[in-house]
Length: 81
Image 1: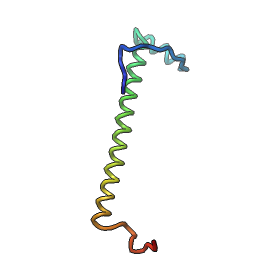
Image 2: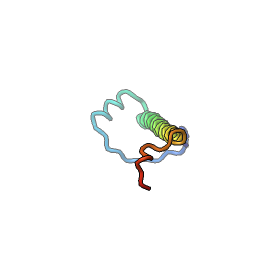
Image 3: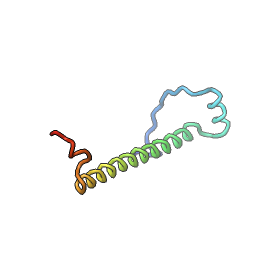
Image 4: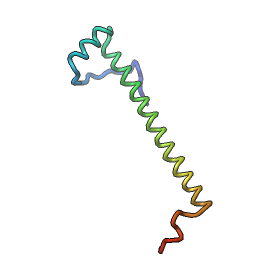
């Protein structure tokens, strides 16, 4: 992720629950900074989750290819091709 915490800012429009925003503002001095930190954490976690999933897929494919190389393709004896 190319996130720069003190990088340039851009205004965005969001639709949020009024009650939630009111409570959040009561709990923090800087709502934008808090939301940005939470969003950055979410993006980083989602990127890790996707990388982990991709790694598991790659490992599964590798294991299946190794199995096929060692034992042959499942159902190969029944194929008419």
